[in-house]
Image 1 (tube, rainbow, N blue to C red):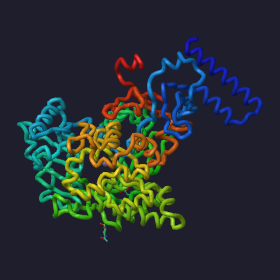
Image 2: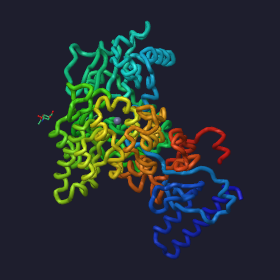
Image 3: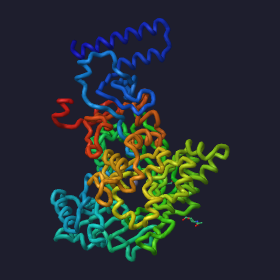
Image 4: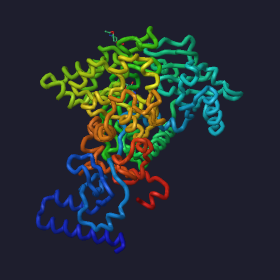
Length: 580
Ligand SMILES: *[C@@H]1O[C@H](CO)[C@@H](O)[C@H](O)[C@H]1NC(C)=O
Ligand SMILES: *[C@@H]1O[C@H](CO)[C@@H](O)[C@H](O)[C@H]1NC(C)=O
Ligand SMILES: [Zn+2]
């Protein structure tokens, strides 16, 4: 019978059951269940990997009208001919445990300089971009770009005058983020806005005329024309569309200012808001306590959650900004710099935790990580004098963002307390070419880019997009092989994997991008899993991940992405119609 008639028929049968149930006085929850059933749909695939201990491998599930999973089941009843027509393999929708939504959208609306191998190439890309973007570079809308690396300029920092490419570039406001977004390189026109002499800023550097790193970036940002709400809304839409395409249904947005949280709250019910966002709040002034400007919330549709804050202990390794216990091996006069001292970090952690917020501290260097652990330990002792640190931590779920270089003593402390490391596997493979030069052999062997060593903590995995590509399959590949997802090779150009003892398994990596970020956002049982009551978010793949050889893993594309029971992305192309 035609589908619509079938549904009408089914609905009336179920309604009749509900009416009878009401008549005979069955409890309300039963009636609700029947009514939910009326509006539910059933989806079947060749295989469904649920990541739930209840039924790890299923074939079908129902989705209720409110966008949650209902029954998850193996279809033992339907005919084999029906089963044979099914296509696709399902896993839970993917989560990125650390990314930057607005910056990602802004990047999609700016010049990409990633992989530009010379100053010439950077200039060419800028000129091409300007040709097709008339308004970029005005005082109201600076020309933005991201992805340069002084390693491509023979190791020399660029300078402002490098951006006076041709006649008309002289008058343009240009601001280009370094590949790790911890430095910016600006044009003479931007410099002309700044006070002279430039103010001193602690925890920042100005390594060349026109380049500003870490806290020194604030000197420029004061004059940066903030994108309008309309432009930011566009950034969000562009970013979400792209993330859905990659099978991403949720992200931890690692640093959202109070006014942006307000913007998010206004948009989270819109149809185009198709990625769940767990926002880590950042105060207007970095590393402060500003509870008056925000409120904890979870939107009714589960698309926006605000219950954590981001603090910063140090900068990045690429610009020697990360705070180290011992000096850098390739710059003996420097051990980076802390952006905050122990006293203040401990106080802020306690204040935020007491106000009910999860505290997530950015820490890259081993000194910064030590400081973060000190602050957490001290806060835990104050917050729960009656219980163990482990129990208290399970309640507060403090996290270290990046957790990149950690002294062996501190690795033991993290494991003992259960602090959540939030790790980006592609940072390891992007940094592997220079990390050992910066850190020396011993520190690299014992401290850097741990994954296997910290696996008992169920690390939250992420990409740090737009610092790295947002593609989670690249992250999984990097975690499983410790090789670059771009080239398939390790730092020696071989295929053994960079410090391969830190490899984790495919299962562990997948958990790092699903159930672990769910736990890290207080969303366990709701996200990253296919089980009754969880958000109905899933993706459809051509093959089960386990069946793929490693080289195919880094090139996986997603056939479909579903959020709240609605399809938000479908890969174009004939294979989608044909099935397989
Ligand atoms: C945050 O709150 C402070 C004082 O409570 C206020 O001065 C400031 O303007 C607020 N900022 C935002 C972005 O609302
Ligand atoms: C820590 O930093 C705060 C704020 O910058 C400062 O007031 C305080 O004196 C510092 N404490 C120590 C022990 O250095
Ligand atoms: Zn980040």
